[in-house]
Length: 127
Image (tube, rainbow, N blue to C red; front, side, top):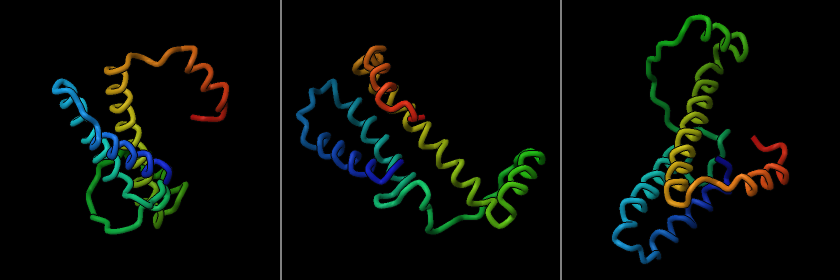
């Protein structure tokens, strides 16, 4: 997430707090609120995706030997943890975004193909 995302999360939280939801909306709003909590855990306010400093906990992870060797060759032993941390954080962000998309599609239906094509034309370099 980029630093502007934290501002968007804050706006979503304010909208949730001020909304006058119908009783049937409560489960959806609770799921959205839980997703926002998860995003804030992954990227605390004021941090960018590249700034993941702070406390670290040593863990043991089993990975295929070929993969660990390839990472070590690419970044060196001293940067291995940072490389893996950034990869896991990006995957977690992608998983959370997929959950958010599913929640929004459940509520509003799939994105209109014409609107999607227009957005892709405006931002051709977007991933």
